[in-house]
View 1 (tube, rainbow, N blue to C red):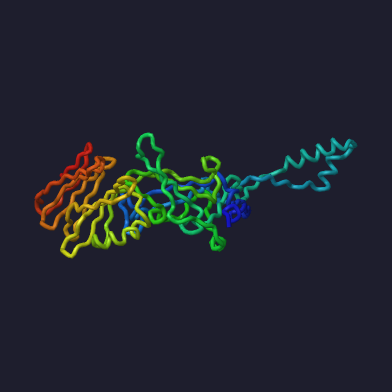
View 2 (tube, helix red, strand yellow):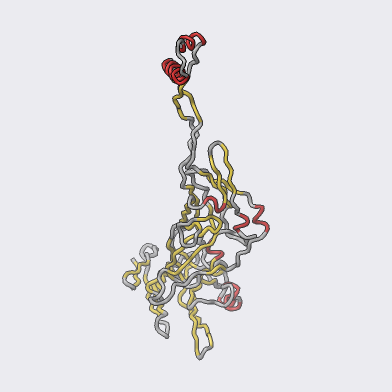
Length: 362
């Protein structure tokens, strides 16, 4: 079922409060997103980006509805007695004159009374919505574009790995309610599991909620703020190199689309190893070049940073008790690899720092 049919306009009024659903609530909902797990990510064994989740909240920007009764002063008119009316109208024939005298006499003995009345929230509107989620019938999409695209090239847009369909189960989702001036609960959405982000680099991300109208945005739907994150061409795989090559397409959800990737792999030894693979196109035929880079101490953690658009820096604690600092540059045709071994002081691994395209440990 299409969202326009599912989110039809519904208007409910109770207690002076208007509740909108669907297109009727346009321009009254704001969306805010954040990245609870930071701004730097690597590739996962199965997910295109490991741990990339988005925290999303909706905010009703209409004024909060007031429920406290207002104090209102009202006029209390005391009626005239027949004797008072007779005294006022004696010897008066003109009707207008009679009415004027009676009205003046009534006002003269008026009093005021303070009463409590329910407030009128004419600018406050509640909103009914379907909770945002990523799945086969979701009503939310994420626009993910490469922020550091090469000059003159159109920024790449990450595509969904699974097509979205509008199916009958969506009709059974219960509506949630967002009161005026309030914020919805936090929704955690696994974007990295649904969007295929292949190339390393910096990306911009924003959410578009297709079921809620907003005339202030280019899409005509509610759009969130924009956040930035970066993806490193590195992943840890619980396989040996032979098994990885044999089941490579399973780990990459099909034929790999990237130009290069680093893998930290298991070994029949008390350490792991890091390999990198690079795409080669020779006379129209695609070939992949595999090379071993270094070892990793069992339980040790690699530090990985980008030193340029196609230059990577790696600091690895090694099984021998030292550490290795490596740079791998994929810019030239022949991959440029440099490395040096560093002794550890008090068995502490230094911190990898990249400045001006150069990697160093400090």
